[in-house]
Amino acid sequence: MSLWHSLLGALPCEWAQLEFMRLALVAVLLAAPLYAVLGCLVVNSRMAFFSEAIGHAALTGVALGTLAGLADPTPVVLLFSALLALAIAWLRRSSVLSSDTIIGLVMAGAVALGVVLLSRGGGFNRYTHFLIGDILTIAPAELARLAVLALATLLIWAVLFNRLFLATLHPVLARSRGVNVWAVEALFSVVIALVVAMSIAWIGLLVINSLLILPAAAARNLARSTAAYLGWALLLSFLAGAAGLLVSFYAATATGATIVLVALALFLLTLPFRRR
Amino acid sequence: MNGPAHHHPASCGGCCTQLQHFGVRLGGTPVLEEINLHVHCGELTAIIGPNGAGKTTLLRALLGEVPFQGGLQFVHSGSDQQFGRPRVGYVPQRMDLDVSAPATVSDLFASVSQRRPLWLGLGARQREEALCALGMVEAQPLLGKTIGALSGGELQRVLLALALHPMPDLLLLDEPVSGVDQAGIELFYRMVSELRRRLDLSILLVSHDLAAVARVADRMIFLNHRVLADGTPAEVLASPLVKQVFGMEFTGAEPGFVRRLPAHESCPLPAPGGVP
Image (cartoon, rainbow over all chains, first blue to last red):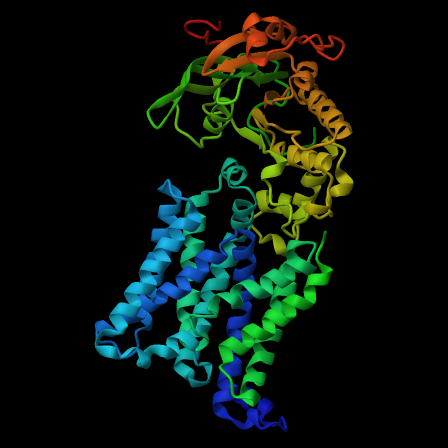
């Protein structure tokens, strides 16, 4: 960390002298690869709507945590999101309703419940930072928590990758090769839920999903192999994260949404390179 | 053959997959009843039947996707050994595969043959095995290609090679040439036919293309919830029942292409009730 400080401190820029900007940049550099590599599988398996729902539904987790009297509702948010992810995975498997209908129902229910609980007595304004997010308030302890989550997530992701890859390509083929598709997908859903839930306080639940989807979608336009797909997604995610943070600093805008706009611009730039 | 390890001799001559009193009920409704079937190795058995006859359900049951009643086992006549459930190789419909994913043929082989995450590349041994499997379908040059860049016929041959790796006891082909051009269809069936002979494969083929199937199959089964006809393609296609269902005459079963096998009367367990 001290090396980091002296590195950034040497930069002749205003932002590099500010502690909160240094911490925010570390957070972005930790989270960017997570969004990138998870996003690649989310896009492949058409789970974009699922991750969107999990992000929005985290509002209910915030409400429950607040009702439980916690100053920081994050543990409750994580638990709630993980359980919700499992519930959706189970419903998708066993229900006669189509997958997007189920996700839509669960999302509508969870968002409404969250708003109702948080707006009791007219105090919803206190919670708007969960909608928009504020990465500039990130504390060193939270950074450590993010680092642990990142490490655990990347480990699970690497171990499950081949099975997830096959399951997203063709579930029946995957099962014929001995992959327990349901278990692998449920575990992956929980991992996504944890990453999304962890990030909403900093990025905001309105735009968090775009950080999963946009770098991967852009990388898909450029890549011809799985390794290249992941490589491009990582590069674009780092680029969008760092550039978005700096732009938001100078333009005095919300960081999460600014990062998303940069990521969207990068996606549009890759469109002409799309195959077919 | 220099292929993957196998749990029974590659050239067996007398092994077969047996279905006895095999049945499937979906939602309480019997879809398949009293199927008694021996699929001998070295023999290509085509399943034909009207829509809704249970052809796909049969394949799904053999893959373990839906529960079934009755017996399913793989037996070896020479040594009177029983091996339990057959190891099933599955060639899915090409149309069901997400070919827009940035994945190569090499990624596909890596995902089924190694624990190491596939973005680290195909291992040296796995690469040899993949080339061997692809060599069986004259598709070695396709290893580094993106699946979206392959023609329909090429992708289908790659999926065939994948199903032969490791060598299955029973190979299932589900509408394998839908959406493939005529030259691709000819080539695919020529290879399937050759491999059946060379590797003594038991093959179950489901297809709507009766004319193409009649040319390649050793044996044909007309299925409509039950086995209604069983014999050579010429015999089955000549049966009044089949003519009635498909509403046309088939004279195109060219005998030159059909290889008659010696009857495998040696299967140790006779089917109770007998095959109609």
